[in-house]
Length: 426
Image (tube, rainbow, N blue to C red; front, side, top):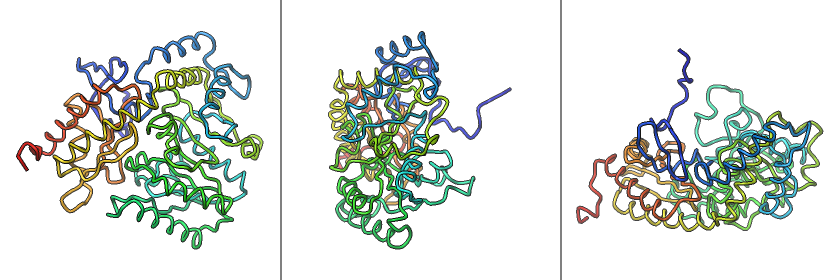
């Protein structure tokens, strides 16, 4: 009997019957509040009626129109819609299928545009699983171990992870920028460095917002040295952080922006955006792909962007994110096992640590499993696996956030075997 690869590890035992909005309905007859959204993909919730209608209509017109052979209207419409939200000056777009493909297209473009070989990434970043993308990923060895040699020309610099260092954010930023300057002096000369590549908020690396001052420091150094600044918005983009793009919490703007995940509510499509001047430096034949910019995915993307705008989902992400974080901070005060709560918008991380401050992956894993029993779907992340991440859909309601918080606290109590501190009078 054929089965799925044993290397695929399912985070929950749930088998989906159907889903709608923030809810997944299992074949076990149970209802689950979904705070995973397919790892930040179903931005408009499961099966949003407008997205479903757009996909159904497009399936009846043409499913696959290979975009270097014939052009199709959904891709032209999606490009126009993206132009309304892209940072100023990024007026040229290339489409692919996945985040990994878009990352590789971005570094290929940066190398061609600058004529330089090296890429600087930052500790804890996740950029994909294909060989080049995994070579750029430092969120954990599981993403790059076992198939060396990896792509050459990649150098890693420090990320300002203030909680890990035990510092305030300003001190962590100062340290990380000094380390970057030292890297440019000792390992990759500026005139050998094609790009800085960073997530505006680390995803698999622990749901850590990148401090605005660090983003702005990268922009200053990129300008000074003629280095391309690439923002990987695969997970942080499309309203996830309470701004349309995650980098908009800072004053920094990218030379190349990467988007995927939430751009089409679950249909596979990704893109990079750059200025026409930069994009024109791509060598002939260096961009393409059989399935890139699929017509059905593009139609879903157009509908997704319309829903985000019409329903005010970026603002909802900000408001519901504030509600979610405030509730998590209250829960933290009742459970000493929670060392840190952080995040932007509907991208919140809860880090579990021991009494000595060391990562506590066992408790995080137990909490994640316990949330499923409580009817709340969550995931873990972080290099040590000690962070539980909450990723509600952008359509999540105040009542659903309240329910999620109640179920999360119940799961923490079960997993830790502890009575919340407030209940003991402590």
